[in-house]
Length: 186
Length: 188
Image (cartoon, rainbow over all chains, first blue to last red; front, side, top):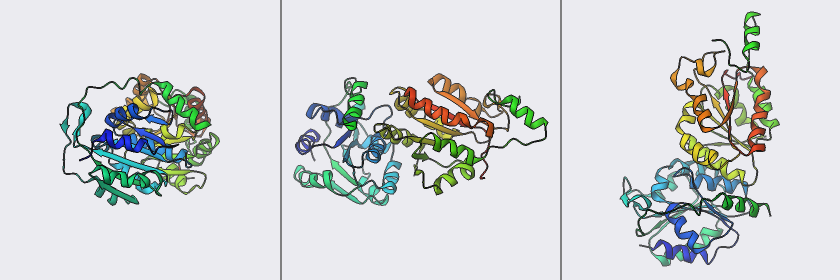
């Protein structure tokens, strides 16, 4: 199992001009690691991070868009894999951090802890897919995550992190969304 | 009750003169193009299938993204706004109802320019949505009102100029708007 924060810290060392779309637990980790205008914290409705990412990838074909999703979140919008598989933006990478629980909502288990997300991505015809469960394997995939012709889907097996409750107030500020828009206009 | 408030007189006049009011899909699509829509995000709807979605799917001026469930549209549309790329969400009223939380949390609370075109499947011709016999149709406008979403209802060709206006309103004020398709668009 991988420590999510450790994986994100490793990923952050390689980030340049990518748009990073993060949600819930991965977002609370990410904002503490790399706070920047090109972050986009998916809010408003659980499960839509990858849909936001798809829209950004279409709007910004010159940039890589990296979605940091959770397993509970993805289960709320599994159809997104089918949509992404069809639209197939080459600049979109969708990572799901799988800890088997709703970490932000009490640590309850997801409905079926045996679900295989990579197989779902394969069935949706997503071009590049992987599952990693140790930090070395994750490190070896970072180049693909950031540069491979996508869409790329990766399932990162992580241990459960700290349980909620958490505050998202800071990351959901409208000023952050305005800063992203400004950064994309430059 | 005859005719929605925004076109009641025209509808009565056309009906009493023996002319069947029409809503041509091509007129609706012309308005969508006039408003600079690039992407159409959609789940198919029987009401708008032949007159709107099928011609849109064949039209090279549009990029059609078929989604699995309506709330996906809100995320995709939101992402597109960050580069001022205009999209139209084309769904049935049932899909609108399904996606209300995403509409609330993404479009309304984040004040994003997102326009929804909502097919009113089963609405009686010339009857205002609020006067429909169908519960699901009657509640659409009150829900839009509670959400603070400006809306219009398109019943006939005469109403179609309101389409581009409603899309422009979304972008000029950075807020969601809705266009109810009351009449069934003809394929020609």
